[in-house]
Length: 276
Image 1 (spheres, rainbow, N blue to C red):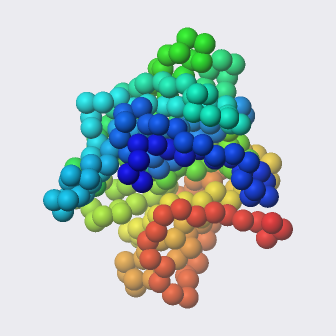
Image 2 (tube, rainbow, N blue to C red):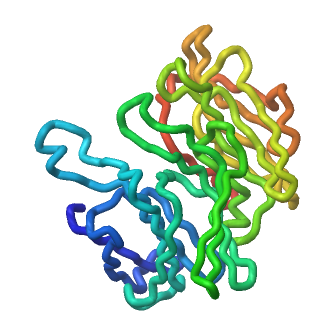
Image 3 (tube, rainbow, N blue to C red):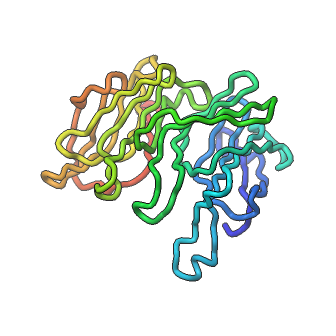
């Protein structure tokens, strides 16, 4: 991981590796690249300026540093590219984004939605809030435009997985309680309508703390389904499966199911239907 490269690979649906090659980073340093995005025809690599500095590690400090004076770089390449020479790079404001909502094509334009932070640090309390944000890459002009879509402190965005790489209207995300709260203080979830700009928030009942939600689709509508997350109930220190109606975001959850044992806070999950 000390080499200033990112390895791009393509596998078929059976998991067989079809191709793999290295792409040099734009900055010439190793970077922390946590997520990527795809569209129908392209892959998007996100080189945010969070660099690995071994000199800091040698002194006992966190080796990753966000250089706010350097831009973010987005490498766009055909999904079945053959080499690093197929990558086109686009620049944007300095930021760091762990997770991406989705990306899609509109003619010669690619839209990418995520939740970046203007400043990121592994030191607790020194980062800026992560917010809903959009980058637009004009493939013909070679330019980038960008804008903040909302100011709520969010992370762990999810969509209906059937729309990965296609234009989606709705996204859901975890909502952080804000400064002064315990670490990992997720107090609810929010639904965004990217078409109208409206949002609906659901706060966990009874002072519960939650985590990343998983979207479980039911029916044909994009937002027809449920949000599932584990919550910690401070009243009896138990873990529960907390279920929210993803369409209505009703303040009363669909169900709160107590688990037989504590489930520690963690990141990332996946809903797999029984038939799969």
